[in-house]
Image (cartoon, rainbow, N blue to C red):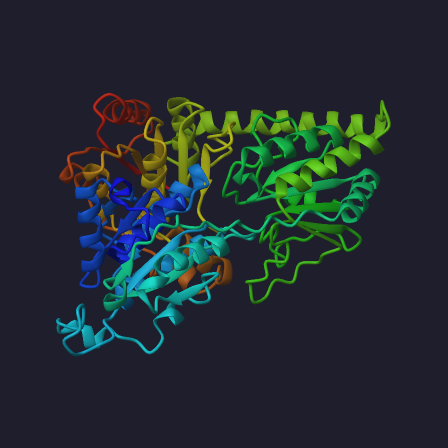
Length: 575
């Protein structure tokens, strides 16, 4: 196209949709994950033209369910740090995204969620309404469906705005704290004509992440130095390898015990001597200083709390969790900014403050290292004992997975995997469900991780409820169609475990407890999940005895690694 230009202005026309796709590519978006509808014709035509002309645009991918598409975009970002585009069908498609969009919002995952909008006009205009559904699908305020979950929402008003709308979305999505954006494309507008022009598409600088206040860092460093029983509780702080390394240095230098509480990322290698497991209770009860690293719920106040005299510091891009309507944790220190930067600054300040040969810190380091070894020995013993039980349990299945998948495998866990028995060592090898808990995320996120890292083993560990929620037929089709061979392991206890536990926690002596909390939690009889993956050309196997687990995992991994087929293990568990 450039070779055809004259020395004057380029007055040739293109469509807003073509300009829009070009802008997505220019802003680093690799994949266009689409669940299409009658609002898509201008976008489809733009992709077809790009295919003929060789124009650079994102890769278009048909994803048969909206939640799968959103979760895949989430998974790609987890691995690459690059936001992706998801496009769905007007109001009805937008409604279907809400479950996993909530996950992305609470996890600060930037993605551009795009939806068509019912055509604006009823007359002869190009792109006007010409299908029966175009009247019923219109809403007074379609953006209201997602407005509480996104950082920005907008409806494209003129074709000339197509590139600017992408730039605006990216500018706001990537600003700290990050999050999704929502853009609506009326069919007449996105199908309208625009002048190509000679000017390159302009990208906007993302506002720099706020730098931590040096005075606040120094004050907190002095508090850490003075503390006798400090504790770090981390949940979301391991998003970057830099943050994992910074926490490892700080914890070692200052002898800070670290508890990974419901981690969504690996925050500290499991073998680090200061890693103190996943339950804060024993250390929290005696703490005199707690550093809360991107943990929205570091403890549940009705169940356990630090002593009244304990001081609490909250650290992260949004230490106040401003989008949570109520969150009443005490806060004596709050430092906003990039977590890796804050931890690095604290470590540098403590390097200045800690005297050489500090016996107090050395003694604490040795005590915590001993506790770390004892915890790991207990987990090893308990895991081995679980293999001798009559039924398969999560500790045994988790242990068997650890021994089979290797340290470089990417694990996407939606609830059941137990990190005590499947410890992870490397940043970027563990991802857990968002704190919002929108069920059905894990399968799609694992597919997104595989899309981003095609040469690595990706393992999705799911409960049976989470697997069914994920629209597994759509997920298996996607895996087969786009050559995304992952291993899915279903911890199948034939129930909604979270529902049962919640019921028993409130009514442990009530009528519901007489039925073991199974009312409205029972998912039996369980379908033959292994047959669903076979329908899409994958390998499936049902496993029911502890002794069968290692060999079954080996067979499934052979299918994934050597045959390049997706595989699923339907593991009948008791828990």
